[in-house]
Length: 157
Image (cartoon, rainbow, N blue to C red):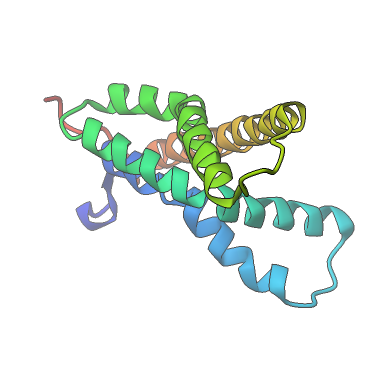
């Protein structure tokens, strides 16, 4: 296989961080259009789109932090961070959610703690589920591409 078609493993992992941002953008025409799709596919596309709209900005912060942290890390270290990224997303999302509530909350309005905790539980479950689906997809893809010789191990530091 030509060296032009080979990608270092570390680069593959770093490129994969764009997937949760690109995929919602790709399904946007389907969400906004009037396509005849099976109900399960409409729901899946809707979830993907909402994940980008709700979690996009906090995810960009997470990716920025991962890039900053991972500058001189090995493939194994970056892969471990990738495995932890859905969990790492939780405090970042929480901070953005609190900030959002403080911005839109009107003085004198009641903040319903119980409703807020339920909402947080739903969002956290969603973040973990979608996050680990993306991680599984990335790790599986890199594994297959390594077997095909498209992805090669990065040189040791």
